[in-house]
Image (cartoon, rainbow, N blue to C red; front, side, top):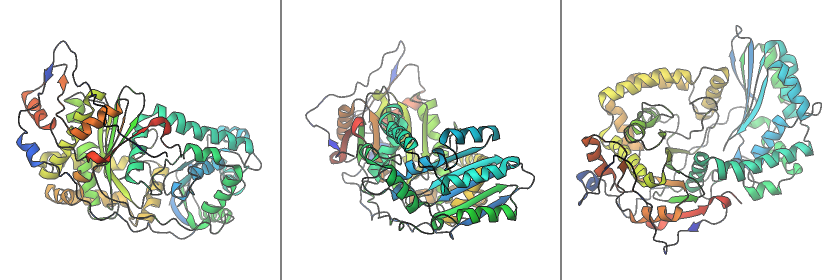
Length: 535
């Protein structure tokens, strides 16, 4: 990535915060800061606690099996999880792990071209896919037991006997480049904001670059690079084998025997450095867009297995469960104020499982982050929405969860967590994650912990773990210079509504429009979208 461009202090234009409507109500800036704002005065220099480090994830035995046998099911599911991800991308070859996984899973085998592979899988209604994150790569498969022998040959051959076709390499590399140039930079502001926040939180760290790679690195990769990398990171000592469905001992032995042909060992594991935990940094990605996307968060040592993880997870679900209408942020910012379509909070890194509202499995991370999202908001309301999220986060930290809302949130999670494990692939995913985190039966543990929680115990964990002053911010917007000036100077950000609002809401807005932003004026940077993740 090119060095980030500092905001020019010479530009003085500000965002237009007015709005036109036949009927309107505006919460004006108060003449003096309200009591709530006085209590929340942010220090000029947020405290800089020690860098965040975390114990390495546990290392299962090579080719360790996780089996969830169900003789009554006609579907056999495979989940091969390698402790290998974008952290294994050598410098200058960012994106190679993801591209290698794509070429293995889609590029054909020695006996089947890519097109022939699809032709064979289609009549079986079989599934074969791969996905890569920071520390893990998954090869998943699913087939009816009647087609198991043929599918097993294919599924193991993609790893053991890949075709490594030059034509497929060029096709998939071109797709990866398009994902950076077009998908990341141009089409998906939500993803761009999340990746920008990663690059800010983990600057100089192996987590910092986009899993899909950087433009210059992808352009320079060769097929020989990919072949060598496969032998370095897709090895027996990094692999956990998950099997579910009508799985007998013979199938288990066959799968382990075949995958024993993988290299026994490869590259040394990457040692992840501690992450600086100073808050108040801002990255503004400038691109032509009609909306503003906001992501905020900080790196934390809190992760699954920590006694505070479950209560903090409940608290942030109450604040803003992903794409659920019950959250405080959803109701306060979207429903009552009509700002946008969604506002959410997460106790660990979140990547939505396609086709669901649930977090993906097998994206375990040694170093976790707590994040909050605003999706999307009109530019004129970007600062107000950011302040609103901070206002309700602060209220959670200071006041906790009311008893009745606590009971609703607990009841919701007792049922909702059961949906997270409704498929064989997801159950395998959770079981495999538990090996690395050391949390056997995680969802059962969560539900048991929920039964014992009280509003007081959750509030105590929240006060220990949630740190609004540690937040860092990523914005995706067109008017980057104007937004940066507002973030630096922090004038009041009044909002105009197109319909009447309750007096209590307008009174609350008086506190929100001057709420202190925990942002350092000397730590605001701008980068053009067209150069983001270039190198």
